[in-house]
Length: 382
Length: 193
Image 1 (cartoon, each protein chain N blue to C red):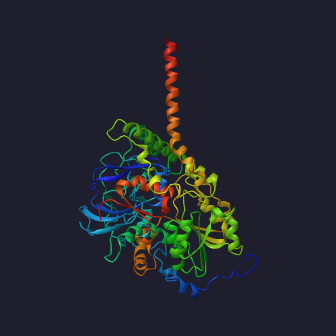
Image 2: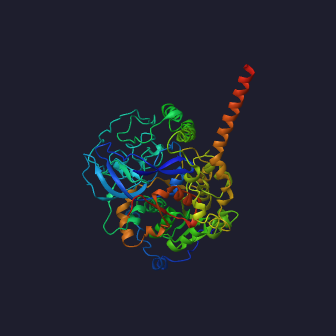
Image 3: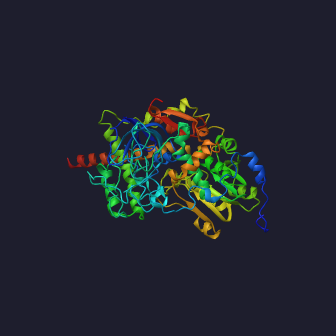
């Protein structure tokens, strides 16, 4: 089969690989019909996530058709069209039994601090991902779900991570009616978080980024106020000024490891990999919110320690809430939101790239060429 | 303001927001949000019919975190450790927990060794690495590389110049090291003669 393969930092290509096989009775093999590149894939692409091995296939956002199933699979049969959460979950460990599907303890031998994620380095279990023609899907009775007839494929693929994670980020903020919410990062996750903040009753939503085309999208897709941090000497002071010097009630960090805006942080975190990422957005969130506020973090950071302003967080009495999104738990409500038009994930798609051109796809997304916001990967002819 | 008891007024009322934004407030009640409450004990909720999953056969020794009691019942078999990078990876897993910086720094070092090993090996294969095609840099010409950056106030453009150094730096360092080592060895060989 054809599959995207990592060759080292900033280098990927398409190679011929063996079609994955059933390795456990509850496995399924899925033929991928649509995948996506996620902003967090760029952390892998840039060599930021420890134990990213040459030969790995990335891709944790994908949908497809069941090709074959293991002997114990009961909920799927070959031919089913499925969407697959980016989390791999057993459904029965201490965490899964409590709905913490992103924290499964039975699927990632490489680490206890993170669950299993498709195509996200051996730190997240080493499973090959969906930027390929076929992918092995463990625990087929737990993760995959049939794509509803009415759902558009591009909505379905974006529900496997970006949409669910954005909504989850707003939820972690514990938004109450009339709250002022600041969202750092106008990528797909941040834009969904901003729009979801309205669904949860926010009174004011402000999106911060430095890319004008993404801020324009925040205004049209999520109907929010915007702040371009590159236009301000000190964005924390600006955010204080526009919130009557009180600060926001809730901040959402949807940037994660490669945040811009502070040269020292970016170079040590994103370029030299001496930190588990550049915590610029997180520090801005800590400093700009009001005392007693809640900060939601679902931007991805690596396991190496970060330079975070923890003292300010303590002194301000902040609540920091964070996790990887337990995708499947979000789906019933999100399906309703997509069906009734409250969330429109496919409006975020800007590029549709054949698998054979994936190296260009990564470069376009990484370098933000052609106003790239969300690139999809098409492994097989539709 | 923060200096007085009342919260600053909002620019729009809830009624105005409800009229302007489709779906405003439909998830206002936290009880209706999918992950609230966060932990609800319901082991059958997601399709598991087992208390502990059947074990996947371990056909080859599989590295694991020493914080795990045993190899997880399901695991990936993709890209097993290989070469010198594999030795470093296995040592990092065998010796250090996830709480130790050495664990992660060794894994990062192994990643860089893996890149060097794999690239060198590729030149002895039918499919040598091609930095030009693999970096996707061709897209600079087909997808408006200059227009996408210049005059747009992008903060990342300030450090874009570093990317070639970050990508090429390890190669230059490795090449320099090999050249210095080889010339030293040659000098020693000549002296011995």
